[in-house]
Amino acid sequence: MKAYLNRRYRFSASHRLHSEQMSDDENRATYGKCNNPHGHGHNYVLEVTVSGQVDQNGMVCNLVDLDDCVQQNVVTRFDLENLNYRQEFASAVPTTENLCTVIYDILKREFRQAHLERVRLEETLFNSFEYARTEGLNH
Image (tube, rainbow, N blue to C red; front, side, top):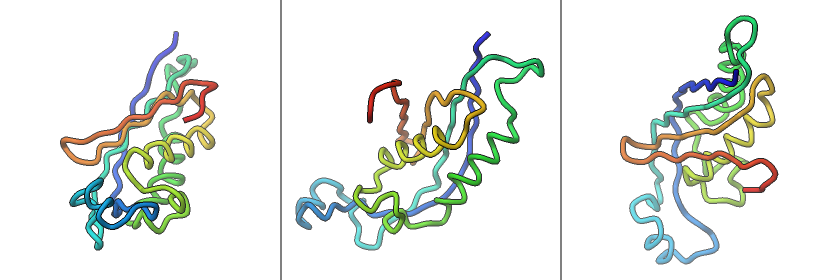
């Protein structure tokens, strides 16, 4: 029997949406108030969905192991950080869409106890982004 587990985490980070490949006017037109030179922050809510067979203990995976993995590899990495200065965004604008794919790739690499289905990142009450890679396709 395949089951799905959704788990939520919280972290705070700041960013400025700005591309070096565009002029200041183009950046303002593209990113609006999110192009503020001083940046801005979000209290992100990350939802991770994993799936797998229910084991003899009645679980898809050990929650402690999932929590430890997300805490060590995602929350600790990005919490209270300015995403523009992170290596992960050296050549990409740190939009929440891009952050979502980065987190997916980290967890896909680091968590092996269950199949990573998707990550969903809530930026505000009105904006959330979800990423799930179709196996065999690049994002």
